[in-house]
Length: 363
Image (cartoon, rainbow, N blue to C red; front, side, top):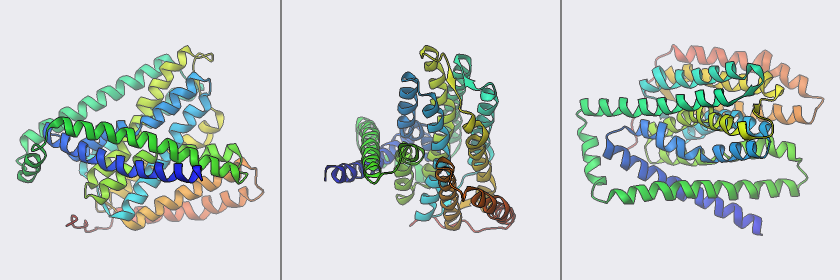
């Protein structure tokens, strides 16, 4: 009974917190002259990634480096496939050219840099500082770029929205952001704990729980926020939150974790061989796959949302089969590698070169 109540309370906090965060972030963005996309890439993305930061740094302090690295890689795969997949099912998502030309390449570049840094098997102090400095530079650059563009742009509709939001004190908007973030963090914690307790009661192993529930659980704030943004018509913020959170996870979460690991017993953040051999490459492949999807009419359609969700289900299925050393693992891998993935790549290539009509804005 208590587990069910914790699950429902966590879900309610996620919904309420996400709505408060989207309202407050949109209002503050209009006040300071940045777009909803940039608000999603910065304030919202950094805030909703707080669970990943807390889990990873806590894992480092407790000398559980595998959990810290696995949490970031797993959360990024979840962010792209599930977050964008569910949001696109709610409403087809418009993708700004800035995302295609700048944000996705930067996200991919950060992941390639991470792979280069961990070739020696660990993330040390210098690696952590490099990643953290790049995050600060990226965030400052986004804000400066958006401010310049907003001053050059005579957007009467944005001005009208700004007047509406300025009718209330800015402290109210800041309070909405803080309360929203608090609700997301607390709600995700209750929801994950309830799910873990339920899975344990049914005899599911701790390994499977860690590979699925914990990794997905720390991304629940991103999911709740992006879906809420999509429902409210803030589709730029929904896309920006997914891309920004993934970039923040690589640069910020692993950067801070790398710095914190200097004071751990291990003297550095070790990267498991299994992650280097498989998971980081899945993460990179998922991010690269964003480009043809985004370019195809500059939208993420519902069928592409279904495709993303299907691939996350396949990835999770592979993890479960591999963890249990199931005798059907080889057959599963053969089907995915020989048929499903090539057919999907062909479909994405064809879609990227076929003109699409962008969906009308929500009325």
